[in-house]
Length: 336
Ligand code: TYM
Image 1 (cartoon, rainbow, N blue to C red):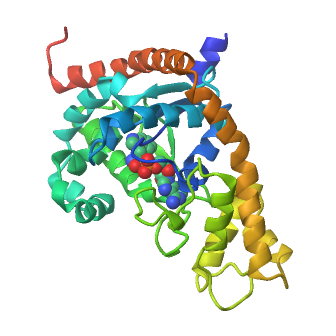
Image 2 (image 1 turned 30 degrees about the vertical axis):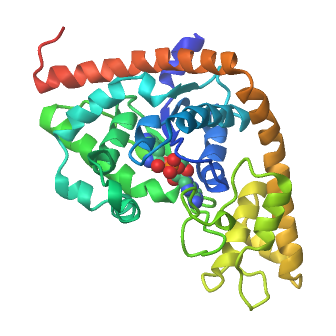
């Protein structure tokens, strides 16, 4: 009975790249929502190591980070018993699906992707084919699980739109094969901004460590980075685009506390930036401290992590294989 229920639940797929240490942007924009969705949906949460290698990775660090990201998923509250947690490269259907979808995707579509444009500017020495093809692998990730919903931050919206276009195109070329997934982008927290340049997204690839807070930053570092966050000379805690630094700190605080921006503004009426920043720093420390402790415990238990990702890959492969077989059959490949 339990199994039947699980099959009827709507499906979620999402992933994070182990390409650097995770920031509170990843946490507030994605992970925190995943935790909320896990009871209602059948969730596949993946560590997308194949996406990570579209920019150069040190092999030893990639291995460490992949396990650390898995530990972070679990420590943040994603229950490995209820959800399928796995590593992308352990399920070869992701790459296979991507090839099949490649042949249904246009160069023009991929060259319009803003993430590709940004990254090819940033990594000008290494504009590899994988970087260009990245969104098709992402489409494959999602479509081979017949996902209904994809919880992501705002920056992934364009990739989700492309995924929908590819799915619809395949469905109309060969007959319905894929669910056309919807993005799930939270109202607050979906775009946490850079602390030094608050008109830019907070990113783990920034060169200035003061511009982001890492999930594993120690409390004193978190406090210091928040106290140094760029604000303005207006001196009033207001939620407006004219005060992007303060707006971002309000977003961070309200996402952590589960309150609205209006409530935060009201609380800080007549209170200066110093106290406000102090409280934001403290809220982040309080939110992350238990997660950090658990991560440290989990990364020391390699056997346990291995048991989680192995079981995850087995379950994921089973589902992914069903869709990939269907795709191949419809395309006209001889069935094995
Ligand atoms: P990645 O690894 O860059 O980021 C992981 C998740 O964190 C969100 N995020 C943010 N949210 C709010 N504010 C920020 N500053 C911020 N920075 C990052 C991202 O939107 C994302 O949800 N392409 C994806 C990984 C991926 C994927 C997938 C996601 C590969 N295949 C299939 C969903 C479904 C990426 O680069 O995420």
